[in-house]
Amino acid sequence: MSKKNQIKGRSDGLVAENRRSRFDYHVEDTLEAGLVLSGSEVKSLRNGRANIAESYAAVEEGELWLVNSDFPPYEGANQFNHEPKRRRKLLVSKREVARLAQAVERAGRTIVPLKLYFNERGIAKLLIGVATGKRAPDKRETQKKRDWQRDKARILKEN
Image 1 (cartoon, rainbow, N blue to C red):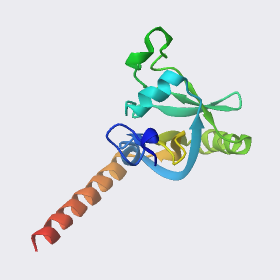
Image 2 (image 1 turned 180 degrees about the vertical axis):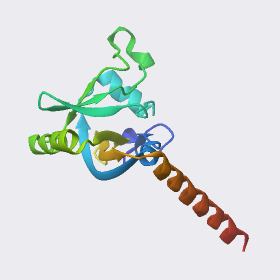
Image 3 (image 1 turned 90 degrees about the horizontal axis):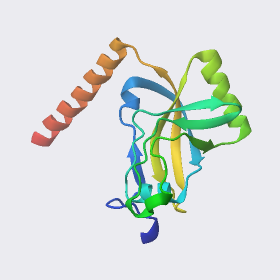
Image 4 (image 1 turned 60 degrees about the vertical axis):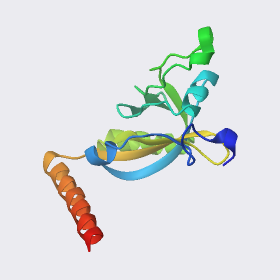
């Protein structure tokens, strides 16, 4: 990745990750989507500033939208800055939008954002997942597995 396309402090292009999504949902399928962004939003992302933890994707009128994501204002944009919590259009094919809409309507699934990053070409991409919500016992099981993996790594490190 060229120096121009790197994120401040990161070499892999990752801007934001929704770490809580894997804990709260069973992610069944993933899809990479492009974003329609203004110039100041891209600059803000290049500074590594974004929050997708509380956001979700919704199908409205045959288009896919990212709702409730927070891209803080870019300081250098002055009066031409963007609105931080506006809805952003996601770029996916019509076939994929229809498939996602069907999954949400019929099967009661949710479309959650997983990662926001810049690809090799320097284009902002959002990894979204089709997911079902976990119940409390499932979350406890996930926590037990995570604790066991941590303990196992600690034991192996000591030996």
